[in-house]
Length: 55
Image (tube, rainbow, N blue to C red; front, side, top):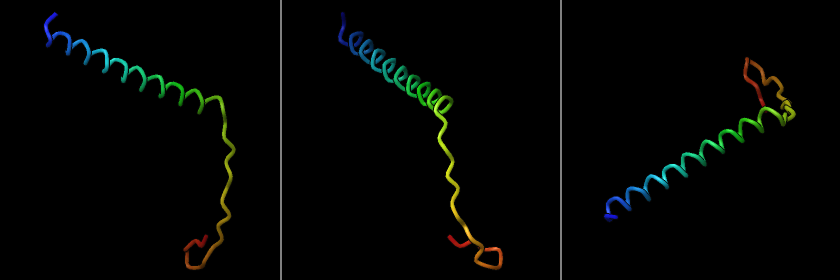
């Protein structure tokens, strides 16, 4: 094999691994978001007057 062909194959393998990993992480994130519901904890906010909320 020529050096340019070898480096091109290495680049294609590396890019395919990175893209596959990114897609896998996005899929896992979607599945976790879908199946593991996180409880929503509302913050207590009181009115500071004149339409401004104070925390």
